[in-house]
Length: 299
Image 1 (cartoon, rainbow, N blue to C red):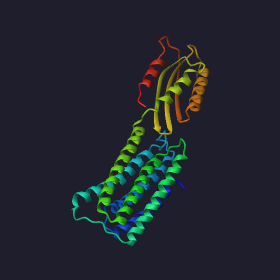
Image 2: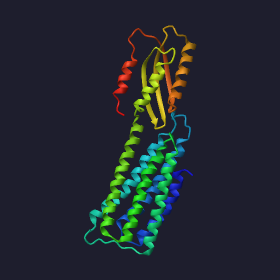
Image 3: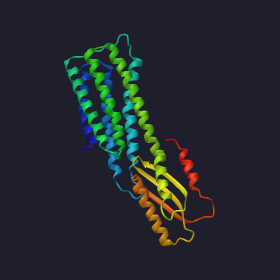
Image 4: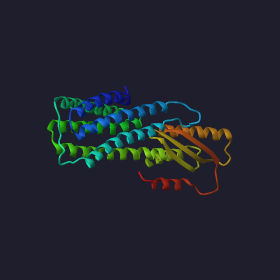
């Protein structure tokens, strides 16, 4: 089962367990955990919708809807992080911390213990699933790693708070949870932002592909070399290459097909390759300038 589908079910179970814990205790951490799981369930549902839409073929979206999964992931991150952060900050600001105490009973301790064990199990499953994906980096899985790691930490802190009934553990744990959620959400959000804006693939990939093109028999020079990430596993490449001065139409088509085949064999993530073959020009070669531009890129 895909982790997103499993996550929706298990987050619902964890939400119920933490809800029982929240009703039978007084704890910032347990309340944050309950809201976190509630927001997670809604966010994962959005992720699932985004993943399903990514598989649809619609004529007015020529590159498909795969990037929609990134948008859905960003929405999910905002939902679960904003809810938990808002709750904890509000409680700390408007609660008299000197009079605040943590209370719990057997039912709240048991329910938070089960929620903690459940969240740790899901986190481990998502990590194993991610490591087995290889190059197929589904953005929804990255979002789930943030989600389940925060869930696991929330579960551990919630259990410790109700088990020890320690005010410091509860308040400090809640602040730590907020800090980690904000950090992980920003890091993941920035990664998705780069893809949505249209970042270039890694420069070592670009240099490898450019070198392969320049070594193709019939290619004299490369005038235009533009590459962009449509998703983390789908790249677009636009080329203009120079060939022999009197190249014919059939020879140009054959050269173009050969270039596309070699580019995709060198780097399979280039799913879209658009090539224009032009006759050789009298101007000096331009590929050296392209190499300098690639070398000047950040990693």
